[in-house]
Figure 1 (tube, one colour):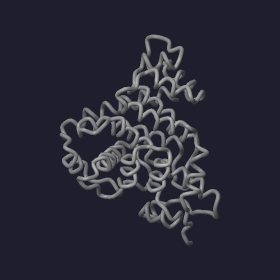
Figure 2 (cartoon, helix red, strand yellow):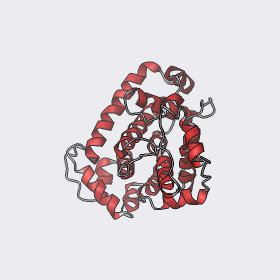
Figure 3 (cartoon, rainbow, N blue to C red):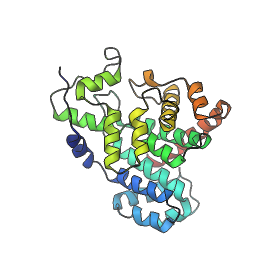
Figure 4 (cartoon, helix red, strand yellow):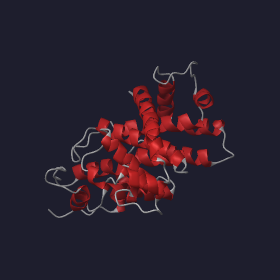
Length: 280
């Protein structure tokens, strides 16, 4: 079967129909990097999407989130929770929206995407602190790295039948994607995130993280490392294991003390369990 060569236009058309939360996440990231921004600016941004605002209030008041005070408004949430937790929550809600679909071509349910995305994001946030990388940027990269898979799923459903990925038959996920769609999911993700006005380094890290990341690509290194750890702990996605490099080597390249890894993984697991309960 010849590959279907998708241009940028259909990729962006499908992505445009997605919920607006990821685009709000991009704006939120810019606010977090702005030293002149305050919590009022954050609240104003979040109020742009009433569905997101209502969901955030439910999450903030959930037993799993453990607020001692009732959070009555987005303004209250911004004050009580703070920048970092608001950023985490918006990301968790965003990726939960993408878990409402299943991924039959890739061979996993939507919940699996949510688990992988959220755990990798929280691992990225943790290990970024040891690698002198912005934690919010690292979290965002981990969270949205697989959005391209959903776009290709939907485009595949629109065109002639695409044989699902089979790890026994299709030993290389990239080759299967290129053959089936003419583009990889990582490339598609990068195109979409650029269109959504995420920083270019976020799109570049996702586009490159399956390759052996060199010293000049620290964010791609961290994403490869975090994805490999997630795989080892049972939160991987089908077909990706072959791309994860030796963790000790990546830690050395990133300047991370391997002795600290266990503590950072445990913290990421604790945050993952709490956020997962809050959005269920």
